[in-house]
Image 1 (cartoon, rainbow, N blue to C red):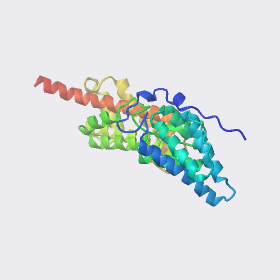
Image 2 (cartoon, helix red, strand yellow):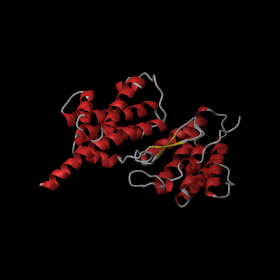
Image 3 (tube, one colour):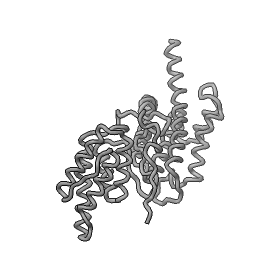
Image 4 (cartoon, helix red, strand yellow):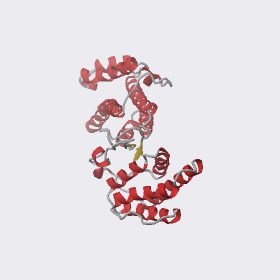
Length: 295
């Protein structure tokens, strides 16, 4: 059986070197992260040996060590015996601290061909605020869980802005950001979109003093001096109706996956919905600034 050809991390995230490490590790690794990987991966093989006594434990760990050496440009281990090999494995892992980040990522996705290793690695990544997650059954093994990468909207800035206008909107945006950290899950992608829809609905209703988004849309479109051109305002209700008609399980949040939506589509829709929220919010803040200036 042929090995699946995996897409290199650098090809999947060509701009990774420009990402910020402020909230998540996006282009660097730490010693604690590497040390925990070096400890957890061999334990997976030990547990697999316990379940399958025919497994060659030394050979399996040696193979993992050789994978790491390929990406750290080291010589393959010449040792045999579990204790000696895992020592080499840990030493080779530590070399990634000074190595190129994309080579570390390619090495991890090679190790993650073993699904139990994949799960163990994701557990380590979560504990260390790592900005990526491994997924299975896909040549693109990495997804970015940093909600500010991939989207054109700055979540933090928009949360700050909307908190001063409508706290309910800000809370929904926070929830959408959280859902995006699990964007490998279909339900999480849908929930992220649902929260963005709710953020838009809450903002429109609050600013127009209504409890119905259709009524809010009409009020806004009837006042272009305040809210801007009608065809822009109409985009909100257009998206609302589209999701109600085409993605019924998104809006109502039930457990029946009657529609599919990809990661790329999710990012597109979230960008579009939050761009609308940002636009409406700007009309409020611009108006407030004008009044302050006139005063």
